[in-house]
Image 1 (spheres, rainbow, N blue to C red):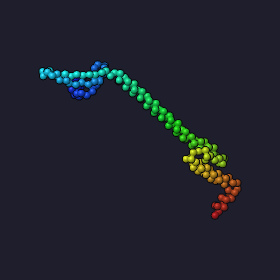
Image 2: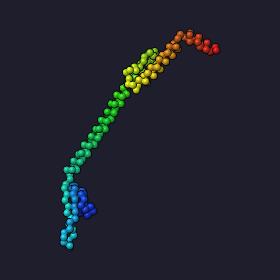
Image 3: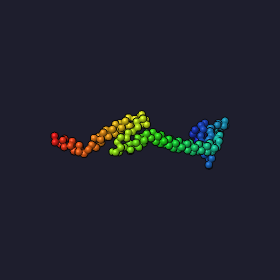
Image 4: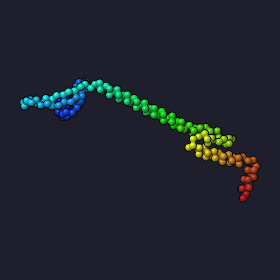
Length: 153
């Protein structure tokens, strides 16, 4: 404590004596007697209750930080899941489309504006596929005749 007072006079500092921690200030005072060296006067108070409070505050703060991080992750997951719900609905509608059911179309009005163009493009593609399948499913004789005519030329 005295060494700290000599190194940093008139400045608050922290001392530990045994298991107790103190916060205080020390200053050198002249005695007025030439033969005596100046006295060191220290005033300090036990800060154990402040340290206990700060430890509890730090634990509580870290608890809130962890809870906030978990809540943020959960809310992000919910937001992403809800945001992707229209894509899942489009996927389910598209899974109905098969070679035998090309007439099925995706609902353009049931999706957000950002996905409406995609649904419209997919519907156009389905229409072209349906038309191509219709042309291919003409009687085999007609197909063979057209093929024979094309190969003869």
